Length: 172
Image 1 (cartoon, one colour):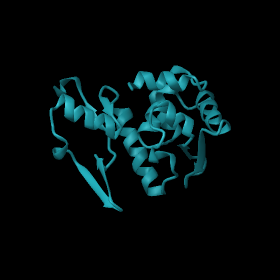
Image 2: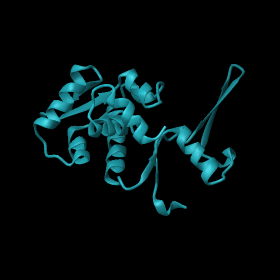
Image 3: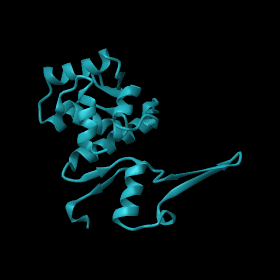
Image 4: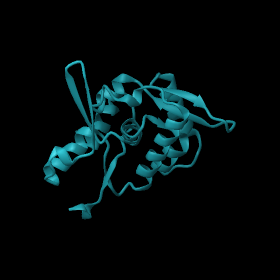
């Protein structure tokens, strides 16, 4: 599923194209955001448009707002399962509430992704494995992974750090 496909799927929930693109990035890169990130993404100044967008997210219960230590600041956690299903990640761990430390890490990842919008970002394990196997011709044994074994089952998680991979056109 491409970023465009994901954003189009989110427009069915009443988001504009710009809002859907931003929500897609948030869902794939941590599940949390702050209003300044939306303003930077949209190229707008803090104001009514921003307030209306976040009011809609909370009113429709797509997101939960958490106050910050700085008065008037909020972190928004997008957790609605239907949104994650729409972008092809129904079982994303980003739907779960994170500790403050983890939320800060995720906000920093989103900042990095937003700052380098000229890159193509691979956010999911599936995207990263597919890229490495098909485009870079790497075998799975050379990919970073964690193996969980127990009860007769074995689960392999590739790219367990969950950090996105940024690709430039010059990556080839």
